[in-house]
Image (cartoon, rainbow, N blue to C red; front, side, top):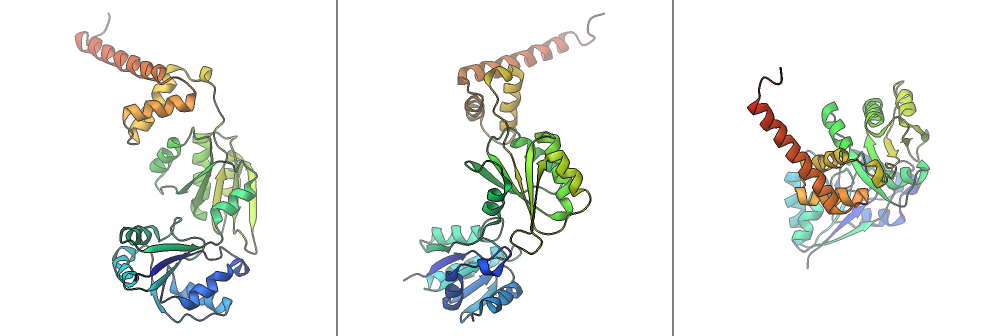
Length: 296
């Protein structure tokens, strides 16, 4: 008999938000893998529960080395409980590697649902919630950050990001540059904690506010791109969008199909625009090669 891996959501702020099953699982687990054992100790004290199982650390720095150890414990019949500092394991926190390894070995995986900063911020943002995508943390380097934002510049679903407080002003300024200064957004700070704050407004306005300094755990929710009709997308724009997708690793055929779907156009129309641009570039290069001095 193999054991079970239990992913347990922990409070993102208020301890009272802890699901009742969390205390039960903490007390029953054979092994508790915690992102921070000191925070785990504070959590168990607040819940009035004692762990009877072995407690081990499981964080970004050691998850690769510790995963095989935990998988072997699971294979031997142990019930392993995984908790992170706040929210659900695997969501921008350790967990995915262990889940994937357990699934590969045929070990059961279940969850104790708990608070989520992603869903809480989304619900509080005042922005559309019917369709959204979670983008996690953006790259720290400015150029890479801009590149990542450009990849989703035309995304019509609401976007959700995590960000460190000391990088928030730069991130919001970059979003204003790529998405547009007037794109609506919400900065959700210290959710469910004493100083919870949700700041809503255009990206440029939020960037100016954040430049004064912001503290706490941050989740940013950004309105999706407005829908554009086919008439607004000229051939050059269609070619540009295909190029962006190709640079991101998509094959040309898939990139053309995706851009056509976004624009509400037949795939043939986007294909023709790409071929025409390629032929124009080839002809320009040929002219330059045969007439390097240009017209005099």
